[in-house]
Image 1: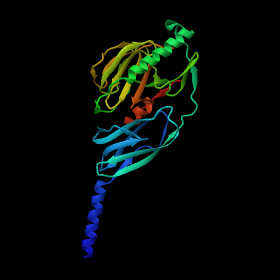
Image 2: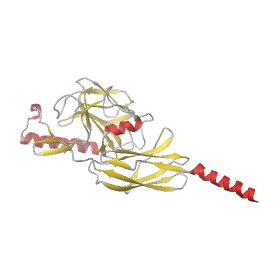
Image 3: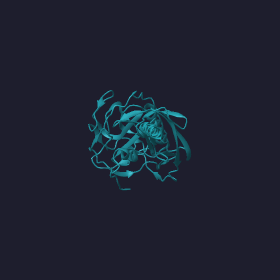
Image 4: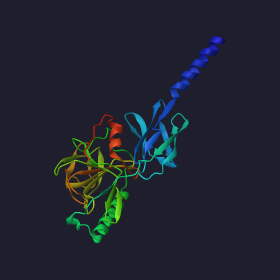
Length: 287
């Protein structure tokens, strides 16, 4: 009888172990960071909520995952992540958002081609930024991810000239820099970071020639200040395909590529996003 009970208990424990799963997500993140959520074990994500909002789920490398974009201005503190799993369990985790610190403020002159440092030029620049941002917000994202491979850098070599999160002073206005500036001489090939659909390919007074790729489920990559665009709206672009050439169009102080990544409508730091896929990624800082 005792032997039978022991066997039954072992079978029960083995059954529970087969359905066990651990929720994987960082315990602490900085403002402006990407968060990746997944599970380890037999169960998969079925539904994910963060700070009261539902987060889309996708499959990559055989596991269900979710991306959360932590806004640069997200109030520091503790937030609840809750996930329903395919085994029927509901698990929760607390994620603490940490302040990035006081941003560095840099003054950037308006180029003479855009009217120089005049009040009217400042107003026109701000209006152009608002118009471009409005177009980005109107993007209708795909209902599923377009990609199956990891995200890759848009340039052959990555050297950051201006980081994510600092502030740009333009006369009476101070604007947050929600992307990274990467060293790139005019004419440097810029490739798609992953398979996606072109949603914007046009020139703006502020952002210059800009290409926006939608990768589905509100994940987008943005490539600004190009000298040439090789794609048009509606094109489906393969990962690694040249989408244009870097330049100095729009509001710039010199040639470079401004790279932005948006998750759920939030612009996050592209560098840690890329490191989610390639932890060993080397990014040189030449500030």
